[in-house]
Length: 598
Image (cartoon, rainbow, N blue to C red):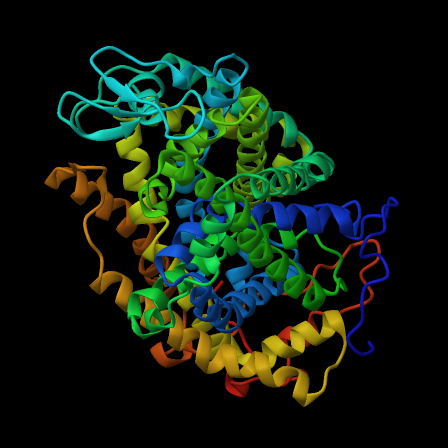
């Protein structure tokens, strides 16, 4: 089929005929790439990576970051893309390649549902701030009762450092975040009432997502032209504005410049942070990559796609750091305090520190609107992928029913996720969000990633999988596959396993600020994580119970009859299923070409 090539339709905007008449394909290559980039480039690129970079040695952190990208991110992303594109199925049905591990796909789906719950709540936070930004002055610049505030050392701007009655120095934005937006209770055990403003914002975001997914990828593929590109426009504007401010140079030096600390590379925690950030930012493990790539044309050049998406994702993280720290440097300058004291991650950066910095700029509402609209579009793209994953799995399970009622399924799914998100918009909601993020979005995805590589290359067979890929992209030289073989067989599973062990060994109980979780809350968090993972052995036992033959033969079983490239009933002469279920394929396990699991 020829050597490695750049697809001629890489940025072709014209309408293409669907190759898969049952599930449909992306309208064109551009919509696929924008959707994948939108899924990968999310909130973590803005509020997590810059913090990790400064925390772990500044520019020195890029060394382990790019090593983990090459050893973990690219191989896993390519593997998941190839699985989805090869058989045009979602992350559950693709595991018909290794029926014994079909629970891996189910674990990813359940993990995705849990993550989508709190991701939807984060969207409600951004909408709240977006609407609040249409005021002048910004509402978080107002001093509440019982607080004494001092003005910045430079200028006569709004946001000030304030001393609470307990003498703790905080920003007014932190007071606004805790008391106005969250109306935060004292802990997980004090649920309180639903914060109706957040509930309405959650409802609005659910309606937007349902409207976008009414026609599946045919409608979401159009929306990403805006949602996947708008964040880059805003980041560029923020960076240009930030570079014109006093103190910006100090902020950038602190982020990735002259204060880089190479001695940090000797700390194991730095390498663990780099690996988990690669997993987090590329969205591997939960099945979104497989679901979206399952709508590709069979001969799509997934090699070029993989490198392009991974490079853009990582470059965006670095670029966002410049935009963030140029503003933080300015903020430290006007307050006359070290940059360390204005640097936070996650919610603290997005909803406390950065709003305070924006409020100190001229025409502050404009900058605030741009910033929170950017966060909202970043979250939307990731949420599109998460919800599309759910509907894809439903479609694969009930194709005839779902295809005729795709719009209804999208609405019902979004309504169901809205109901699941309501506990997270109570006065104790932020504690639930933090709990899910800590236990589900952490080491669970590492377990899934390890089993993906192990299952495909040590059970299904590495040579067989490479032959499958060559059916799509053409025969490649031995040198081309050298890097992939080295990673898939040795480096990726070994490094993933090491990072998993370190994550569990170095795990500490989650907290929110100074609030600790009760024992029952931690137990519940572990139950959520274990529930995802236990699906893997449970499904394996179910398959083994219904299998025929010796135990050894079952363990070395070939793919089920469902594992094959998509065969269009009208135009299916290209490939024959004999390729998969006879001796016509080079297999790592020649004795296991007959499936024994139905």
